[in-house]
Amino acid sequence: MNTVFVWFGFIFSLSLLIFLARKNLWVGLFVGALSLGFFNMSPANVLRVFLNTVGDPSIILLAISVGLIPIIGGLMEESHLMELLVQNLRVGKKGFLMLSPALFGMLPMPGGALLSAPMVERGGDGVSGGVKSAINVWFRHLLIFIYPLGALLPTTKMAKLNVYEEIIYLLPYFAVIFFIGYFFMVRNVEGEINYDKKFNLKGLLLPLGIILIAPLVHFSLMRFFPIDEIALLIGVSMSLSAGFIFSRLEFRKIFTIAKKMRTWNYGLIIFGMFLFLNIFKASAVSEIIAAIAFTPTFLLVGIGAFLGFVTGRIQLPVSILLPIFFSKYGQEAMTPVAFAIMFFGVFMGYMFSPIHPCVSVSLEYFKSS
Image (cartoon, rainbow, N blue to C red; front, side, top):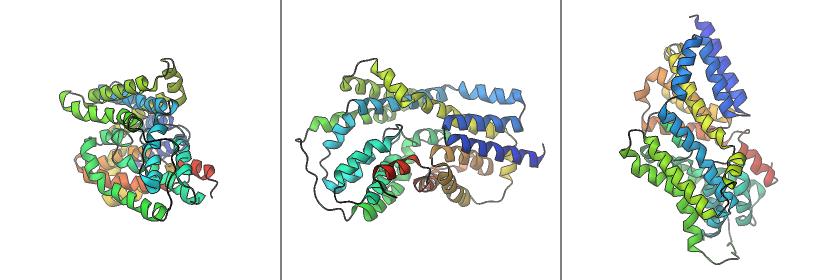
Protein backbone atom coordinates (compact mmCIF):
# COMPACT_ATOMS: atom_id res chain seq x y z
CA MET A 1 0.00 0.00 0.00
CA ASN A 2 1.22 3.50 -0.85
CA THR A 3 2.99 5.03 2.16
CA VAL A 4 1.75 8.56 1.43
CA PHE A 5 -1.83 7.31 1.25
CA VAL A 6 -1.43 5.46 4.57
CA TRP A 7 -0.02 8.58 6.24
CA PHE A 8 -2.83 10.71 4.82
CA GLY A 9 -5.40 8.26 6.16
CA PHE A 10 -3.78 8.23 9.60
CA ILE A 11 -3.55 12.02 9.89
CA PHE A 12 -7.07 12.49 8.53
CA SER A 13 -8.60 9.95 10.94
CA LEU A 14 -6.64 11.40 13.86
CA SER A 15 -7.76 14.95 13.03
CA LEU A 16 -11.34 13.75 12.69
CA LEU A 17 -11.10 11.93 16.01
CA ILE A 18 -9.76 14.96 17.90
CA PHE A 19 -12.23 17.36 16.25
CA LEU A 20 -15.31 15.25 17.00
CA ALA A 21 -14.09 14.31 20.49
CA ARG A 22 -14.31 17.96 21.55
CA LYS A 23 -18.09 17.53 21.44
CA ASN A 24 -18.49 13.80 22.00
CA LEU A 25 -15.59 11.51 22.87
CA TRP A 26 -17.13 8.16 21.95
CA VAL A 27 -18.34 9.44 18.58
CA GLY A 28 -14.84 10.77 17.87
CA LEU A 29 -13.24 7.44 18.79
CA PHE A 30 -15.65 5.39 16.68
CA VAL A 31 -15.48 7.65 13.62
CA GLY A 32 -11.70 8.01 13.90
CA ALA A 33 -11.21 4.26 14.27
CA LEU A 34 -13.49 3.34 11.37
CA SER A 35 -12.04 5.98 9.04
CA LEU A 36 -8.54 4.70 9.85
CA GLY A 37 -9.72 1.19 9.09
CA PHE A 38 -11.33 1.99 5.75
CA PHE A 39 -8.19 3.86 4.63
CA ASN A 40 -5.95 0.87 5.35
CA MET A 41 -8.07 -2.28 5.33
CA SER A 42 -10.81 -3.99 3.39
CA PRO A 43 -14.39 -3.49 4.64
CA ALA A 44 -14.50 -7.19 5.57
CA ASN A 45 -11.43 -6.83 7.81
CA VAL A 46 -12.77 -3.66 9.41
CA LEU A 47 -16.03 -5.49 10.16
CA ARG A 48 -14.08 -8.43 11.62
CA VAL A 49 -12.09 -6.20 13.98
CA PHE A 50 -15.25 -4.30 14.92
CA LEU A 51 -17.18 -7.48 15.79
CA ASN A 52 -14.23 -8.96 17.71
CA THR A 53 -13.96 -5.76 19.76
CA VAL A 54 -17.61 -5.25 20.63
CA GLY A 55 -18.00 -8.99 21.23
CA ASP A 56 -15.05 -9.33 23.62
CA PRO A 57 -16.52 -10.35 27.03
CA SER A 58 -13.89 -8.44 29.04
CA ILE A 59 -14.54 -5.22 27.08
CA ILE A 60 -18.32 -5.65 27.43
CA LEU A 61 -18.05 -6.12 31.20
CA LEU A 62 -15.65 -3.17 31.50
CA ALA A 63 -18.01 -0.95 29.48
CA ILE A 64 -21.01 -1.92 31.64
CA SER A 65 -19.03 -1.31 34.85
CA VAL A 66 -17.72 2.06 33.71
CA GLY A 67 -21.23 3.01 32.63
CA LEU A 68 -22.62 2.27 36.11
CA ILE A 69 -20.03 4.35 38.00
CA PRO A 70 -21.55 7.76 37.07
CA ILE A 71 -24.93 6.57 38.40
CA ILE A 72 -23.27 6.08 41.80
CA GLY A 73 -22.06 9.67 41.60
CA GLY A 74 -25.50 10.84 40.55
CA LEU A 75 -27.17 9.03 43.45
CA MET A 76 -24.77 10.59 45.94
CA GLU A 77 -25.27 14.02 44.41
CA GLU A 78 -29.07 13.74 44.37
CA SER A 79 -29.24 12.51 47.97
CA HIS A 80 -26.61 15.02 49.18
CA LEU A 81 -24.42 12.17 50.48
CA MET A 82 -21.31 13.72 48.93
CA GLU A 83 -22.10 17.04 50.56
CA LEU A 84 -22.60 15.20 53.86
CA LEU A 85 -19.18 13.59 53.46
CA VAL A 86 -17.47 16.92 52.80
CA GLN A 87 -19.26 18.63 55.71
CA ASN A 88 -17.87 16.04 58.13
CA LEU A 89 -14.24 16.11 57.04
CA ARG A 90 -13.10 18.35 59.92
CA VAL A 91 -9.56 18.67 58.53
CA GLY A 92 -9.00 22.42 58.91
CA LYS A 93 -9.31 25.11 56.26
CA LYS A 94 -6.31 24.06 54.19
CA GLY A 95 -7.28 20.40 54.30
CA PHE A 96 -10.88 21.26 53.41
CA LEU A 97 -9.80 23.25 50.34
CA MET A 98 -7.72 20.32 49.12
CA LEU A 99 -9.94 17.38 50.04
CA SER A 100 -13.39 18.67 49.09
CA PRO A 101 -12.67 19.00 45.32
CA ALA A 102 -10.52 15.83 45.43
CA LEU A 103 -13.40 13.74 46.81
CA PHE A 104 -15.86 15.09 44.24
CA GLY A 105 -13.31 14.23 41.56
CA MET A 106 -13.41 10.53 42.44
CA LEU A 107 -16.74 9.98 40.70
CA PRO A 108 -16.99 10.91 37.00
CA MET A 109 -19.96 13.14 36.28
CA PRO A 110 -20.76 15.87 33.76
CA GLY A 111 -20.05 19.33 35.14
CA GLY A 112 -18.37 17.86 38.21
CA ALA A 113 -16.27 20.98 38.76
CA LEU A 114 -19.49 22.88 39.45
CA LEU A 115 -20.25 20.51 42.34
CA SER A 116 -16.92 21.06 44.07
CA ALA A 117 -16.80 24.82 43.37
CA PRO A 118 -19.34 25.76 46.09
CA MET A 119 -17.29 23.75 48.61
CA VAL A 120 -14.12 25.63 47.63
CA GLU A 121 -16.08 28.88 47.86
CA ARG A 122 -17.23 27.96 51.34
CA GLY A 123 -13.74 27.11 52.57
CA GLY A 124 -11.98 29.85 50.64
CA ASP A 125 -13.09 32.93 52.53
CA GLY A 126 -10.44 35.61 51.96
CA VAL A 127 -8.87 33.75 49.01
CA SER A 128 -8.84 35.41 45.58
CA GLY A 129 -11.02 34.09 42.77
CA GLY A 130 -8.00 33.14 40.70
CA VAL A 131 -6.52 31.02 43.48
CA LYS A 132 -9.88 29.39 44.19
CA SER A 133 -10.20 28.52 40.48
CA ALA A 134 -6.74 26.94 40.55
CA ILE A 135 -7.52 25.01 43.75
CA ASN A 136 -10.78 23.67 42.31
CA VAL A 137 -9.12 22.45 39.11
CA TRP A 138 -5.85 21.21 40.61
CA PHE A 139 -7.13 19.25 43.59
CA ARG A 140 -10.21 17.96 41.79
CA HIS A 141 -7.82 15.84 39.73
CA LEU A 142 -5.42 14.91 42.54
CA LEU A 143 -6.80 11.42 43.20
CA ILE A 144 -6.73 10.50 39.50
CA PHE A 145 -3.32 8.92 40.22
CA ILE A 146 -4.47 6.60 42.99
CA TYR A 147 -8.23 5.98 42.57
CA PRO A 148 -8.55 2.78 40.52
CA LEU A 149 -12.05 3.35 39.11
CA GLY A 150 -11.29 6.60 37.29
CA ALA A 151 -9.21 7.19 34.16
CA LEU A 152 -6.74 4.51 35.29
CA LEU A 153 -9.24 1.68 34.88
CA PRO A 154 -9.67 1.65 31.07
CA THR A 155 -6.18 2.97 30.26
CA THR A 156 -4.34 0.30 32.26
CA LYS A 157 -6.65 -2.28 30.71
CA MET A 158 -5.56 -1.10 27.24
CA ALA A 159 -1.92 -1.33 28.31
CA LYS A 160 -2.55 -4.82 29.80
CA LEU A 161 -1.33 -3.71 33.23
CA ASN A 162 -2.73 -4.35 36.70
CA VAL A 163 -4.40 -1.14 37.83
CA TYR A 164 -3.53 -1.68 41.50
CA GLU A 165 0.12 -2.40 40.75
CA GLU A 166 0.24 0.70 38.56
CA ILE A 167 -0.96 2.90 41.42
CA ILE A 168 2.28 2.07 43.29
CA TYR A 169 4.31 3.52 40.41
CA LEU A 170 2.09 6.59 40.24
CA LEU A 171 2.48 7.47 43.93
CA PRO A 172 5.55 9.69 43.33
CA TYR A 173 3.60 11.71 40.75
CA PHE A 174 0.68 11.97 43.16
CA ALA A 175 3.10 13.37 45.75
CA VAL A 176 4.52 15.89 43.26
CA ILE A 177 1.06 17.16 42.31
CA PHE A 178 0.02 17.39 45.97
CA PHE A 179 3.08 19.41 47.03
CA ILE A 180 2.87 21.74 44.02
CA GLY A 181 -0.77 22.45 44.84
CA TYR A 182 -0.10 22.90 48.53
CA PHE A 183 2.98 25.11 48.14
CA PHE A 184 1.64 27.46 45.45
CA MET A 185 -2.11 27.52 46.20
CA VAL A 186 -2.93 26.56 49.78
CA ARG A 187 0.14 27.18 51.93
CA ASN A 188 -0.67 30.83 52.71
CA VAL A 189 -4.38 30.31 53.39
CA GLU A 190 -5.26 31.36 56.93
CA GLY A 191 -8.26 31.07 59.23
CA GLU A 192 -10.70 28.35 60.25
CA ILE A 193 -13.99 27.04 58.91
CA ASN A 194 -17.07 27.57 61.07
CA TYR A 195 -19.35 24.54 60.84
CA ASP A 196 -23.04 25.04 61.56
CA LYS A 197 -23.58 21.37 62.47
CA LYS A 198 -21.88 18.96 64.86
CA PHE A 199 -19.52 16.29 63.57
CA ASN A 200 -21.36 13.16 62.42
CA LEU A 201 -19.21 10.03 62.13
CA LYS A 202 -21.90 8.21 60.17
CA GLY A 203 -22.12 11.14 57.79
CA LEU A 204 -18.41 10.70 57.10
CA LEU A 205 -18.11 6.91 56.89
CA LEU A 206 -21.34 6.10 55.03
CA PRO A 207 -20.66 7.99 51.77
CA LEU A 208 -16.96 7.16 51.96
CA GLY A 209 -17.85 3.48 52.27
CA ILE A 210 -20.13 3.64 49.22
CA ILE A 211 -17.25 5.04 47.15
CA LEU A 212 -14.69 2.50 48.39
CA ILE A 213 -16.80 -0.68 48.18
CA ALA A 214 -16.24 -1.10 44.42
CA PRO A 215 -12.40 -1.01 44.37
CA LEU A 216 -12.14 -3.07 47.57
CA VAL A 217 -14.41 -5.83 46.22
CA HIS A 218 -12.73 -5.71 42.82
CA PHE A 219 -9.26 -6.07 44.33
CA SER A 220 -10.38 -8.86 46.69
CA LEU A 221 -12.19 -10.99 44.09
CA MET A 222 -10.30 -10.46 40.84
CA ARG A 223 -8.00 -13.44 41.41
CA PHE A 224 -10.99 -15.79 41.68
CA PHE A 225 -12.41 -15.12 38.20
CA PRO A 226 -11.00 -15.93 34.75
CA ILE A 227 -11.93 -12.39 33.66
CA ASP A 228 -11.00 -9.55 36.06
CA GLU A 229 -13.97 -7.51 34.90
CA ILE A 230 -16.42 -9.96 36.50
CA ALA A 231 -15.06 -8.93 39.91
CA LEU A 232 -15.17 -5.30 38.80
CA LEU A 233 -18.84 -5.53 37.84
CA ILE A 234 -19.66 -7.20 41.17
CA GLY A 235 -17.87 -4.43 43.07
CA VAL A 236 -19.49 -1.60 41.12
CA SER A 237 -22.92 -3.24 41.47
CA MET A 238 -22.44 -3.48 45.24
CA SER A 239 -21.46 0.20 45.41
CA LEU A 240 -24.48 1.11 43.31
CA SER A 241 -26.79 -0.99 45.49
CA ALA A 242 -25.41 0.58 48.68
CA GLY A 243 -25.78 4.04 47.17
CA PHE A 244 -29.39 3.33 46.24
CA ILE A 245 -30.28 1.86 49.65
CA PHE A 246 -28.73 4.66 51.71
CA SER A 247 -29.84 7.46 49.41
CA ARG A 248 -33.45 6.42 50.12
CA LEU A 249 -34.54 7.52 46.67
CA GLU A 250 -37.36 5.92 44.71
CA PHE A 251 -36.28 3.13 42.35
CA ARG A 252 -37.46 4.99 39.26
CA LYS A 253 -35.10 7.80 40.21
CA ILE A 254 -32.20 5.63 39.02
CA PHE A 255 -33.40 5.92 35.43
CA THR A 256 -33.74 9.69 35.74
CA ILE A 257 -30.20 9.89 37.13
CA ALA A 258 -28.84 7.58 34.41
CA LYS A 259 -30.37 9.86 31.78
CA LYS A 260 -29.03 12.98 33.47
CA MET A 261 -25.52 11.52 33.78
CA ARG A 262 -25.66 10.17 30.19
CA THR A 263 -24.22 6.97 31.53
CA TRP A 264 -24.25 5.26 28.11
CA ASN A 265 -21.56 7.70 26.95
CA TYR A 266 -19.05 6.24 29.42
CA GLY A 267 -19.62 2.67 28.26
CA LEU A 268 -19.42 3.63 24.58
CA ILE A 269 -16.11 5.42 25.24
CA ILE A 270 -14.66 2.07 26.35
CA PHE A 271 -15.73 0.38 23.13
CA GLY A 272 -14.36 3.30 21.11
CA MET A 273 -10.96 3.22 22.85
CA PHE A 274 -10.45 -0.49 22.20
CA LEU A 275 -11.81 -0.26 18.64
CA PHE A 276 -9.23 2.41 17.79
CA LEU A 277 -6.47 0.35 19.42
CA ASN A 278 -7.43 -2.87 17.60
CA ILE A 279 -7.89 -1.26 14.18
CA PHE A 280 -4.58 0.56 14.53
CA LYS A 281 -2.78 -2.69 15.37
CA ALA A 282 -4.38 -4.45 12.41
CA SER A 283 -3.70 -1.66 9.89
CA ALA A 284 -0.61 -0.79 7.82
CA VAL A 285 -0.04 2.34 9.94
CA SER A 286 1.52 0.33 12.76
CA GLU A 287 4.31 -0.96 10.49
CA ILE A 288 5.07 2.48 9.03
CA ILE A 289 5.22 4.20 12.43
CA ALA A 290 7.45 1.43 13.77
CA ALA A 291 10.09 2.48 11.22
CA ILE A 292 10.23 6.10 12.43
CA ALA A 293 13.23 7.09 14.56
CA PHE A 294 12.00 8.78 17.73
CA THR A 295 12.76 8.10 21.37
CA PRO A 296 10.23 6.66 23.81
CA THR A 297 10.77 9.73 26.02
CA PHE A 298 9.77 12.08 23.20
CA LEU A 299 6.65 10.00 22.50
CA LEU A 300 5.49 9.45 26.08
CA VAL A 301 6.36 12.87 27.52
CA GLY A 302 6.48 15.33 24.61
CA ILE A 303 3.69 13.98 22.41
CA GLY A 304 1.73 12.88 25.50
CA ALA A 305 1.72 16.38 27.01
CA PHE A 306 0.92 17.91 23.60
CA LEU A 307 -2.09 15.62 23.06
CA GLY A 308 -3.30 16.26 26.61
CA PHE A 309 -3.12 20.00 25.93
CA VAL A 310 -4.85 20.03 22.52
CA THR A 311 -7.59 17.57 23.50
CA GLY A 312 -8.24 18.62 27.11
CA ARG A 313 -8.70 14.96 28.05
CA ILE A 314 -6.86 12.00 29.59
CA GLN A 315 -8.31 8.91 27.94
CA LEU A 316 -8.20 10.20 24.37
CA PRO A 317 -4.42 10.90 24.29
CA VAL A 318 -3.70 7.53 25.91
CA SER A 319 -5.90 5.85 23.28
CA ILE A 320 -3.73 7.45 20.60
CA LEU A 321 -0.34 6.96 22.28
CA LEU A 322 -0.62 3.30 23.24
CA PRO A 323 -1.09 1.85 19.73
CA ILE A 324 1.76 4.05 18.43
CA PHE A 325 4.01 2.89 21.28
CA PHE A 326 3.07 -0.77 20.75
CA SER A 327 3.85 -0.58 17.03
CA LYS A 328 7.25 1.02 17.66
CA TYR A 329 8.52 -0.74 20.77
CA GLY A 330 6.23 -3.73 21.32
CA GLN A 331 3.61 -4.26 23.99
CA GLU A 332 6.11 -5.72 26.46
CA ALA A 333 7.94 -2.36 26.53
CA MET A 334 4.90 -0.70 28.13
CA THR A 335 6.03 -1.41 31.67
CA PRO A 336 4.38 0.10 34.77
CA VAL A 337 7.18 2.70 34.87
CA ALA A 338 6.68 3.66 31.21
CA PHE A 339 2.93 3.90 31.72
CA ALA A 340 3.37 6.13 34.77
CA ILE A 341 5.64 8.49 32.80
CA MET A 342 3.13 8.63 29.93
CA PHE A 343 0.17 9.15 32.25
CA PHE A 344 1.91 12.04 34.03
CA GLY A 345 2.94 13.63 30.72
CA VAL A 346 -0.64 13.51 29.44
CA PHE A 347 -1.93 14.77 32.79
CA MET A 348 0.25 17.88 32.75
CA GLY A 349 -0.88 18.85 29.25
CA TYR A 350 -4.49 18.16 30.22
CA MET A 351 -4.32 20.31 33.36
CA PHE A 352 -3.15 23.40 31.47
CA SER A 353 -5.41 22.95 28.45
CA PRO A 354 -7.71 25.92 27.75
CA ILE A 355 -10.35 23.50 26.44
CA HIS A 356 -10.32 21.43 29.65
CA PRO A 357 -13.98 21.85 30.79
CA CYS A 358 -13.09 22.08 34.49
CA VAL A 359 -10.84 25.06 33.77
CA SER A 360 -13.48 27.11 31.95
CA VAL A 361 -16.21 26.17 34.43
CA SER A 362 -14.07 27.14 37.44
CA LEU A 363 -13.00 30.45 35.88
CA GLU A 364 -16.62 31.33 35.23
CA TYR A 365 -17.82 30.33 38.69
CA PHE A 366 -15.16 32.28 40.57
CA LYS A 367 -15.26 35.23 38.13
CA SER A 368 -11.53 35.05 37.41
CA SER A 369 -9.63 35.51 34.15
